Image (cartoon, rainbow, N blue to C red):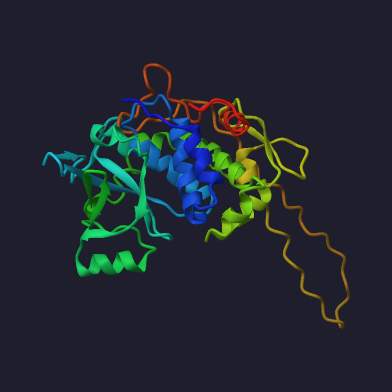
Length: 337
């Protein structure tokens, strides 16, 4: 199948005041990734999780890809189907396994591509996003889950109910803790994935910095996100019809790349200690601190995940063109998909 998305779901997530701010902030990048990836083949769990990991990091949120296998049990028919494998591996550009994201700070885990599986796809309920509740775990695993900060321990079983389906995730063993990011395909395409993640993070930040949303977003428990929201308030894409758009900040007339905007500002020059009165005063000029600039990576197609090659129909792009314009159209009464 192909990834589908609904602009209406993104608008409902961002502008519904009843949704908890931390859930809004943490789920928005996933929904935007799905919107950007419309047309991809659905078996993209590895590229989704690694791209989102970089996007979350840009926003000041720690996320970790976790290899899992998934048993889907239909309680009505009694059918049980295993997806992924307890021993995931890469075969060239193909990842044999399944993966999810762990957000240790909030204790959530996210399965962005769960609808690649037909039993889940027919319900059209979107990605899995929920608090970590172990279905079966040792006392040590339970203690680690309660403590937070360390992610999901190896061998933990996580249960999720979706209508008449019971989903049982089992995290892979310790020896597979970096199997997703250490694959040659991920390493060779890291620059493309990071570039795609910057676009994703900027899209999320522009939506969260909207005057109707920014106060709620600021209450989420992510200090660096609040700094970025202040920076993005009043900002706008100058040209989002590029692989890495230019953006104009509120108090800066010069369009800048996302790499420049998303980098932390340069540190101020160190304060020179006041000399003792007995020593002669000497006038010195602090060294000029150049603004950080990162050359935009070359425009190349991103890696896929489970099948990490571009789709034959050319649908694989790091970000779909004009997403923010289509969101604006939807907000002003345009057609929803």
